[in-house]
Image (cartoon, rainbow, N blue to C red):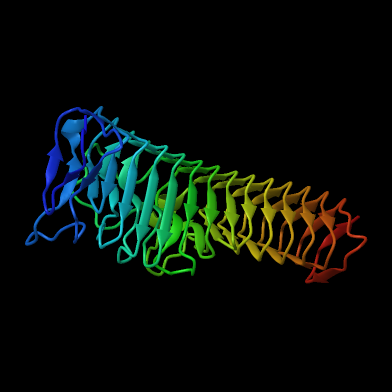
Length: 361
């Protein structure tokens, strides 16, 4: 148990045994300056390694302190408070779960960074079955990603983990800088079969997106290759993106019950249902689009099934798509071999460009 604040400037602590730490609201402050320190620099962090499996850390505050959890399993952080206002988190994120972590939970906690030189907050690098739940995460000024499933700067990985997979990011409230910054995405997902559920994002930049991969864009790629496996099949469910926060979803994903106020791009072969869209939306080919409300300009690419939606804005539907039982209230443009059947388009204009569109209203 902590019985007082612990200021230890430029110290390094390793937890290598199972522990139950009760902070009693006191603060650990290591005055981390360089974040993930280069070998020539003094280490200034606290690390829970594989020996600390099955540990519990509750009601502890960390101030300007790099926190690592590396290669460990079954660790829970509950009701912690992590604040930084200097360059903490270089290369890793200031609260970093890394190198083969399994079933690490961070819940009911508060994270707040102010001008920490663009470093991320909670960053999972090669982790499986981790849970980030019911946290408040705030970034002000020059900060990095708020929740980050990262694939870069990977150290030695244990537990045969090769991807960020089957992680849950749920019921968090994320607030980004007042001005959108290309260094800060609210939730960045690099890995397959992750679940992003019931989060609220207040930010006018990138709200939910894929991890950067050079010239590769997971939302627009049309080939089958290594990167597709990296981004395959995530679930984005019941999230609210406010203030024009943008969304980019991975291919073969489930996008359901969300409220989108910013620009949306959804990759191919996705299931898109029960969402509300209030900005420009693009849905890639081979997708199933059902029971949504589109309130702005929409483009749906070829070989898609479009059923029981309401389109209040203009819409373009591309070739070989099936369009059934929708309501259209603005201009509709169809391109080549579209099956347009049992739709209500009496208050709209339907434009047919190309041959073999089958219209039966």
